Length: 325
Ligand code: TRP
Image (cartoon, rainbow, N blue to C red; front, side):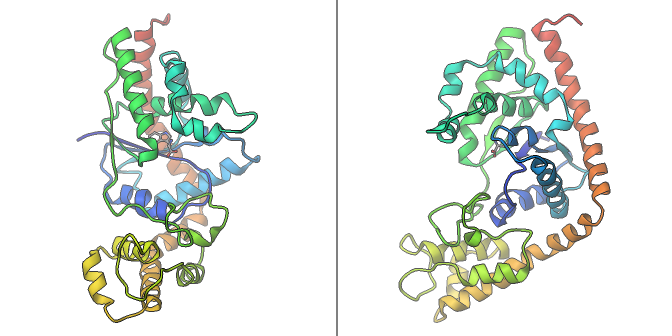
């Protein structure tokens, strides 16, 4: 069984794009060797108001458990609870070349034109490499915006192995299945995003069914009136993709269903289907919210499980680097 590692940042408000593209899929596909990490150390590469990281970490954990991630099956934990992440990140920072970090497009985009950019934002990829390599990961499911970081992780792991002897498994990126991309309801050319300035284009997991329905009914559509997908109809295509993702039915079947019907009919159907899809998780979330102590206990158990694997790797790494034991 390949070991799979997934990381998700506790920033912004979790939305339907995260749900369809990552969280609910992780839950459906979980295996005993899957490791799920809420990367709170990555969240502070851009300064956050006090208390925000703690609150968002607990909230995200509740959504992961609400999705059905089962602490008895997979390992769900918070990055800062397993100290080996920062320890390995330092060693990997010493294995990574500045030229490699200078080439990272995410760093270039996030730092471009900004004052006071943190060194942490720059060394972000070495912490991400540590996350992955600590667990001797085979596969990392990521979106295209992260594949460059996985390439770097592979290069750094290979360099470490060449310098110090075989220590790390070389991981590879796996790209999520098609249909996992949910676009913004107001700007269907852009991905639905956690930090979109206007929240009218993103369906938040934490909102009510009424709010969800309202956003879908107000989604932008395109000229014409036929319910068909196509490059000239980004709005309608997004609604059909969404409906397909939450019902499991393919686009041609859906187009046939809506023959002779109007955009309004499509939106009504999408609103109901999306709410049906998220309802069980929203109900479980409401239960978990009543018992945050239990959520913290589950995370603590996850950290213990993760920590055992992480410490095995770190013991090998300390020996390989040549520290006095
Ligand atoms: N950088 C990833 C993102 O922004 C989050 C992340 C941190 C991650 N560590 C990871 C993803 C390890 C996969 C594996 O989406």
